[in-house]
Length: 269
Image (cartoon, rainbow, N blue to C red):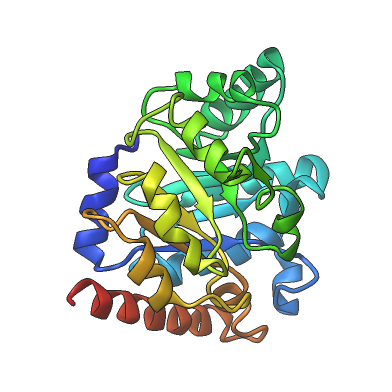
């Protein structure tokens, strides 16, 4: 069970709201790791050991593991098990389907993998999301306004004078509370955080797009924070692929430390 109070406590203790994204691509990891029995897990383990003092969460992009079949799923399970219990674990799988299917997805990620949180796609409506909020101590993280350029195709279209992402946030707030519901909001859309906070004043926001995608940490903090910070800023490639040599873990630690120091500075303002 990973509670909001625990997350807030970790943010204060580490002076960090950093989430490290494990988008682990076997074609990009250092070549010397390929001799390991499980290269993907060996890479993840080293990254976690090097960065856990600087972050409060890890987000595992499940596609990179599922693509490898049964072996990839095993690597993912080992990774979830290895992450320190004081860090929130997020399965970035973007699930959401008719009720019975969603029940099975929830069971797979919350019971089998024991992830604390799961990203969810709201396109099919609230009944496709309800099963995920029946697991006490687990979080649903609903896609609201994403950082990709094509978010304009749907998320930023207006219906009845309001953006679709506004309706998504307003409607899904009925499913959960600030204790088990977050929203994904891209760092590349900082001007929209004020509008988003109109509907989700006290919820946590998972914010991708800082780092390799060019989002500004300062703008995210300025426009997105709430009284308990309410932000998990994710950085993936800029940290885990800081180097592809023997020093990859040390380079990852340096990148994570640099972000943590920026966050600490902002938190003290």
